Length: 253
Figure 1 (cartoon, one colour):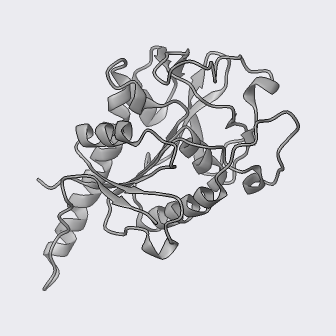
Figure 2 (spheres, rainbow, N blue to C red):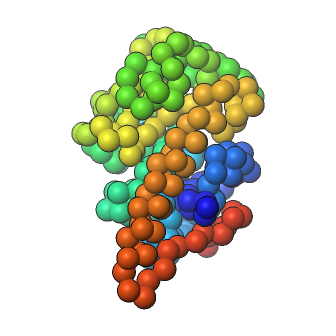
């Protein structure tokens, strides 16, 4: 069976092989896009989308400016591209997984807001511990939704590399995973087609069994979309289903 094509949006500082490996192991074919890609060149023959981690979403996206004593890290070119990617995915009803920054961008896209520095607003100082990327920093618990079925009901350890965090949740999303200090660590849409996690599952695939399950979920939903699309195409005269390549494809400037 053909593997679903997964658009993977990254930044230039991302450790991209970790994401590629996670998608391939889950059964998908990653198509990697970089900041600076013209919006008209966004790959359309895809079955799902993953937004990788990276620099902070610029606060002007949710009506704020950077606050004093907050690290100013941004990639407004990437913000712009990924906004267009989510637009495209929503119009096509494609499944979307947001990881760390990607989770935050999804929340802002749907009208939510962010804490610019979670340590400044009363949350525990464990969300950016300054350790290796696979360091298990704190525990989270899934309380409802698809994340409950993916992760189970017991608290599990995750890694953590973020300054920003979910403040108000976007319209049509619900918080489903929480850290011990109450910070939202995962959210999703009612239909499970949009999923966001605040940690980096791609970096702990071998450490935590729930990590590969996150990627398997989004790839399986994408595969369902691919099969449905293929079925429709097969009943149309002169049409043929999309068969994506089996290796990662780089698309960028």
